Amino acid sequence: MQAQNAIATLIVRGLVDSTTPHIAAHLERINLPEGLVDLYPLLAKRKADPDVYQPRTFRPEGPPTRPPSSLPAPGSLALNLELGEYIGSGRSGIVFAVDTTGTHGGLPPLVLKIARQERCQSVAREAWFYEELECLQGVVLPRCYGCFRLDLQDGQTVPAWSAHELDDSDAGDDLVDVPAEYHGYSANALDILDQHPHPLLTELGTARDCLVVLLLERLAPAPTEWIPERSFWLTENAEPALLAAHRELAHLGVETILDIGLDNVMFAPPSPPGLPTMPSPFTGLTHRLRIIDLDLARKCDLKFSFLSRALEGWVRRAF
Ligand SMILES: Nc1ncnc2c1ncn2[C@@H]1O[C@H](COP(=O)(O)OP(=O)(O)O)[C@@H](O)[C@H]1O
Ligand SMILES: [Mg+2]
Image 1 (cartoon, rainbow, N blue to C red):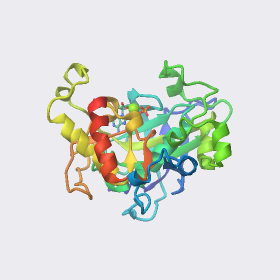
Image 2 (image 1 turned 45 degrees about the vertical axis):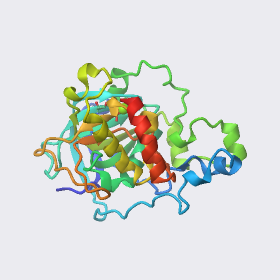
Image 3 (image 1 turned 180 degrees about the horizontal axis):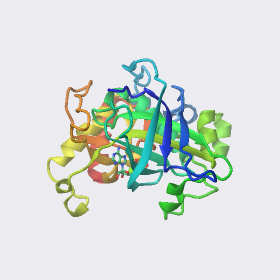
């Protein structure tokens, strides 16, 4: 099996249209610095408002550190893919199946999450969470085979962007895609606090001639009996399973409250052809659920007990 960091280049047919026909798009893996994402709530904000940010809810020893990676040294594989059927989309991305036949094998069924033109920052930031939570890939998260980038040249267009536009008006040319831990702070307030997102996220936040994609393990839809008529009322055993899955992330100080909900819950892929589910390194539990869509996730140094209790309310309200 190929490791999740084996691929250095993606060569994808059907992803980019250009004036030179039949040329496949070459995307290069983005190396994400470990310090890409800031702690939430922002440290500068906490120092400014010590009365609001009760110290007893935070871990005195700081946020949980990223467990060491169990992957080998990054590989240099160039993977040829063909864009397949459209699967779904949301605020940040448009997801397609990809055809891996003709590759050298060693990969499970995959999907490509194509960042919307104005959401490159969000999807690159999401990739950081997959690295931060590597030990939960195949446990409660899909396995992530990397985040890749192409700077578009004149005449190159991305058909998926125009074919699957968001009807929501909060997208658009003038939108600045701000990291989730910075939501709700004005530029002026951040200048005063002298705290700003990582330069890579700032650059991607306004980029419009940049294509960013995530290569993910293909998951199965959550079974409809869990979501009777999608009425948003869950059957009895769904709530504990959702809570247990989201609690795994809390062990590493990660919460997804800004985007928790049915759209972002799927099931483990059938195995084979998918890879097997792994038990949690924290609880030993084996989950059927998978949480997707980490582009609004936040890394916190809140105590596990605080996050865990908060999750009970969040899960009950969101599903
Ligand atoms: N790994 C995956 N396997 C299969 N389908 C997926 C996968 N990831 C996303 N999808 C589908 O694509 C939709 C959009 O993906 P999501 O990551 O939620 O994007 P957004 O950030 O735009 O909401 C999901 O609701 C789901 O239907
Ligand atoms: Mg989503």
